[in-house]
Image 1 (cartoon, one colour):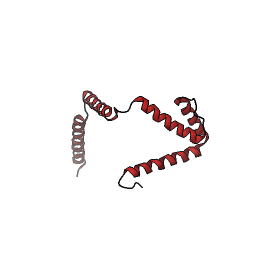
Image 2 (cartoon, one colour; image 1 turned 30 degrees about the vertical axis):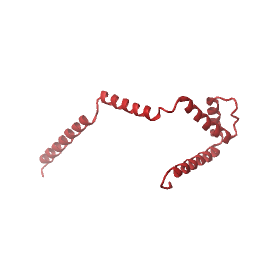
Image 3 (cartoon, rainbow, N blue to C red; image 1 turned 60 degrees about the vertical axis):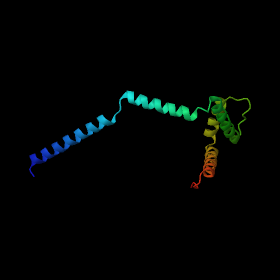
Image 4 (spheres, rainbow, N blue to C red; image 1 turned 90 degrees about the vertical axis):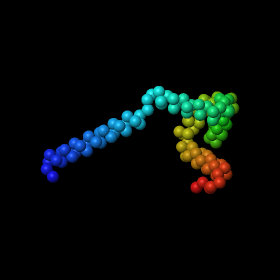
Length: 124
């Protein structure tokens, strides 16, 4: 093939690629109104799914979780706010990374065991 025929073939191929990608992007990109509508739908689904959980329950779960971790590290939990516990736990995690790794492993194993009990198929 001659050089000009090759150039014409590449130019044609490139133009087809360019046309096909612009058509794809025009059809696939939703407008901002459509995206806002989808976001609103997801928010409604989320509210329906978790409407039974209120902030007091979430705070209580956090307190239980932080108390467990604090006791594992030997931190006194009496009379401390959630934020104070969180700060002391962060400090203990930095000072004792091996202990933190052991706790994470222990919690992971507990979670797997719980999931395995709920599941029909064993989790490996």
